[in-house]
Amino acid sequence: MSDKKRKNKTAANGGTFGNQESKAGDSILDYIATLKMKDSLYTDVYTAVSVLRSLSNLGKNIVMRLLWLDNPVPDNVFKSWVRTSSQGLNQRGYMPSEALRSALERLTRLNVLIRTRGGEWHIEPRFKASLRKFVRNDAPDVGEGELAPAKKTVETATIEEHARRCWERILGLLIDESGIGRWGDEKEIEGIRQILIESGFMDDLGQRITPKGFRFLFLPHRKQVWSFLLGYVKYISRQNKSLSEDLVLRLLFMLSHLSLGQDYPMKSLSEPQKKVISHLVVFGFVYQRKKTSKRYFPTALALSLSCSEDSLVGTLGNTHGKIITETTFRITAYTSSAFQIAILNKFARLDYRLPNSVVGVVTKHSVMEALRNGINAAGIVMYLEQYAHPQMKRDPKTGKALPVAFKEQIYLWEKERQRFSVQKSCFLHEFASTVEFKSLLEFAREEGILQWFNERKQWMTVDGSAAEKIKEFRQKTRS
Image 1 (cartoon, rainbow, N blue to C red):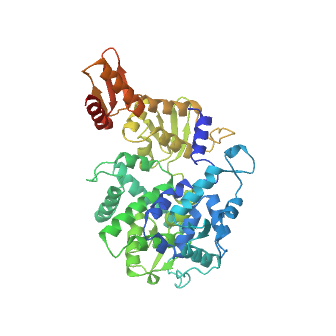
Image 2: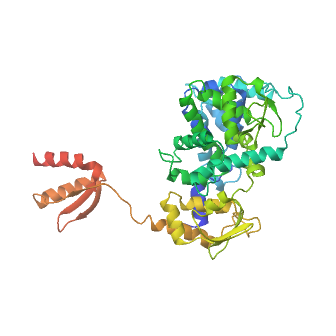
Image 3: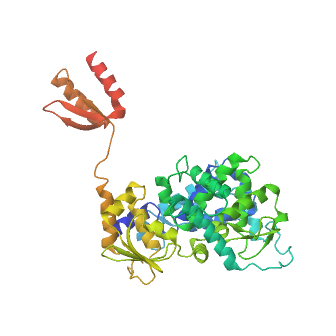
């Protein structure tokens, strides 16, 4: 599939158009949409603002336009705000109708936007009240400025290093190579492992990474962060009834609106919240000098929960190195991290290592092995594109750095494994007569369940799920 066709297909599905839903925010929005108590969550200012930030540009515009209106807006007026076109991106100044439909569907699923029986639109009252508080600078106080200056100042670099090491430990436990993720208290390691199991990234025994876990390793940082935290929210709310999903999510969204390098008092938190903070210290979302400290510092991981992907670059940096990909399938990654090298080893054959870089080759064998482990071609391509060296030559139209021949070969190798598809079938033969065979053949065609037939031998296969239909038809025709 060419870049142009692949791009058009993605745009049709709402993937590349600027006003589509933010992919990085999909995981948390999808999760909130499933919660029964999402409306009560909206009474929290920080939750409401975080949901707003995770919406598409069009979704944000709709919400902000309705925010200060006290009365519902009629459907015809509401739709007149957006000029839509079925021709999509081809008409200048027009929004694809699919973009509007997608934005409205997301807003209604989140119960942010409500449509009355009369066809009028308005924002959910609690969500509206929380957003208005934020706009009026009336958000709840988090205790900033209440603490006396610390005797020992904590540098931002120290906070960032803590976040980076903790996050690499989590990812390292998945890879389980060279003891990357095995430093620290054994109880902490076991707790992280249980969350990885809850998230489906490791098997039930916590000994092997699953295909879902492999895909997790190749996600952008922010999506990784939310995927892990959602596993934590589900796990901890089941293990400790006092730490409900509502409480943990509110605290996470509150942390995402604090300032990096600023300390905040522990006394402003409830006991259940303090317990969650102790867990977040282990994960790298919060920094404390010691467990009994009276203050805590949010890290860039916590701040990224309601910000853009770029907010993690300063802390995690280009954690997977700056990768140069050549048309000869050789890759050079400028990194010295054992974790980053282990990731590359999942889809490339690494030949030699230098003090600040590692060199290898992407081969058919290495890609096939990655595919067997659950990593797909799109994941490999996205990974190499995302961490491409800034000096690589880029396509002036798409801005992509990966050589086209390299990219297409990865997809071709994947297609080699998809040449055969397995379907459940029901094999029919030994018919009483040619008439019976032909009548059943016609019936299978009309029902759309015919898979294959041989008229000379009077054989046929139909969809395996249609066995009962065939049985009923034969009984009816024979009676």
